[in-house]
Length: 297
Image 1: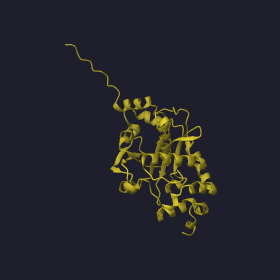
Image 2: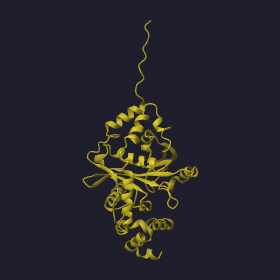
Image 3: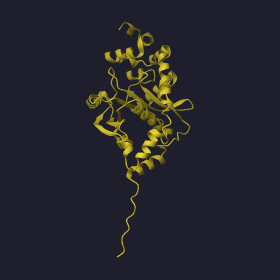
Image 4: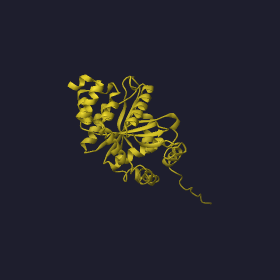
């Protein structure tokens, strides 16, 4: 009887998924001419806040305001990062990163505070990937994944133990592909709109035992995320440039003063946090331009 020859094992489902994403431009450096960088000056920050506003208004996630900008209290610190894609001076993509703090916490505390407190209680250093927007013309390109490389390498080199992201339920499988695990149940993020999300976590200091240890794809993820990451040397240079922008009290105050809801809708704790983060000189200018009565508060 003729022996049946066993076919060699084919590529795994994960390998096939990566190949599929690559055919759509993901995990490549093809950005169609868009330049990847961090928003480091007032003009780039304003263009970023405008893109976020336009996207969120279109989805019904926020209420309109006269400035056309969306600025949160956590955005008033140079520790918060917005990695952007610029094409012909226009910001066409953004991915944000917020570091946990005692005064403001993280954006996702509003619906996942218990889960985030668990990470904190384990002596975790928690960063949150937040705000992920790519304009339609650049969605099937490497823009998204190039921005995510910036987020990941800053988290790794910045000592983050737990990188979290609150993502749409439709994005869960993608985040699992890139190493995240679900740690929070499905919840609705936006009041008055259907916005079902889950909380995902990446163990950023344990990648050699996790994402990089995957049998077929671990070497790809390590090379792509860390070893061949072109942004590793630029991350800290961009950070210094942004700190210099925040030290220009006039420019940064004028930018934040353009958003009428920043101080007027802030809670007392948020108000005091903004004041501490900007410092007395910058906050005084902001209060004078934005909300004169705030000077005496």
